[in-house]
Figure 1: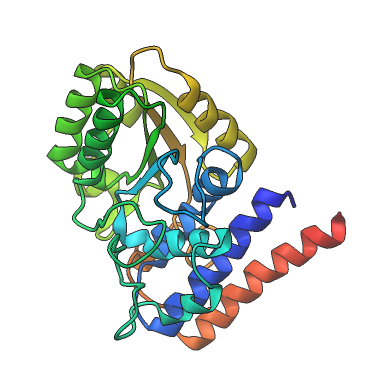
Figure 2 (figure 1 turned 90 degrees about the vertical axis):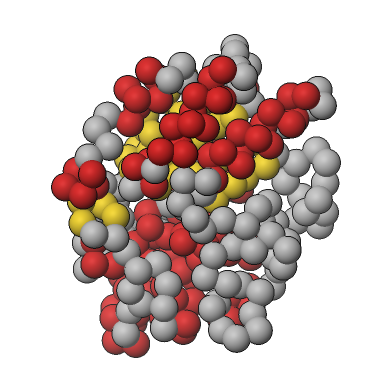
Length: 279
């Protein structure tokens, strides 16, 4: 198991624990994007400083699919933005770790999100602002594939291409499921790569669970300033790492019972231990 794989597995363990403790949350889409966040935060892609979250030299990250907040919290806690023990307060009264991320309370959260479809617009605005100020930093946005059914996503895509925002990278967590079932059955988004390309974006597709490939693709997109915004279509599995959650739409927004959480943690920690013994 590589260091990035270990980071992602640790994040998945934290996701299951905190959602089970809260008794509510969104495990499926949080688990599917763990490798993407591991690549960004621990693979040298995202410039950031846990000691100074408002550092002007930081790259910006927008979690457009705000319901996957447990994944972001797990990454931020691992990175040192706040103590890992605080993860146990998810969704509890008085906790700053709300069900959707709050930039006014949580260090490292760039913007409050939750209303699907708005995140890419916010990211595009941030990228445009950096361009106007002559600053070199990049902006990353992580979208859900169900979220791409929102019209505002495509308004933002049109704006970003028109403004030549080559400092913007949109990553689509393409797990093929949403709260009501398969995306192709609910409202088929079709070939998302072809759609972004038609809007004038540079497009790359990647295995969203291959941490090394993610680092390479995301790093290349960040470095490419040839006049086009970048879309990375990451093929993922909803509920990744927990066998009974994988590819099951029912785990979009349902917390596991204590017994189910124990089974999930056994699967995750067992896989980590097996890889460690092989090494």
